[in-house]
View 1 (cartoon, one colour):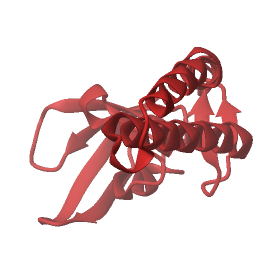
View 2: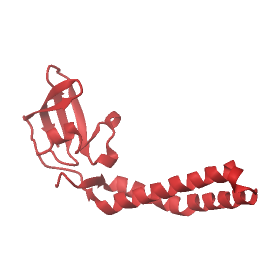
View 3: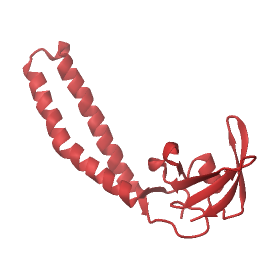
View 4: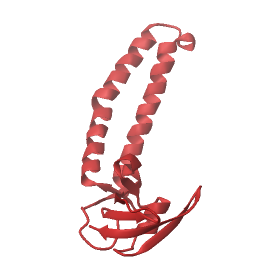
Length: 155
């Protein structure tokens, strides 16, 4: 897999497509209806409802463009099954000086969520792990200094 490509899971792709359909359909219609109503209230220069609806419309169109760009520029990856760390790998690591194992899944930047153990392949930690295998040690810099991990397993 190419490190410089944006990756998303099939699940994330379906989620984005569903969101896009909602935004382009019902949500867009709702905003247009609100805009017509706000226009009917009169003087647009002092019409807070009109200005808020226009702002909502701008945010909606921005989100639609972002989703379309993600879908167009991202590659969907299948779940990983090798012994080398790449996007889709589940990696069990152990921090130096700690006996506790931690499990991370390497994902594309759109799906990164440290609270769920999903780290981006473009994060410093993700880049340090990428291409390594079981038994390798990795290190990367954080604001608090260098951190070292040992890879316990890759699946």
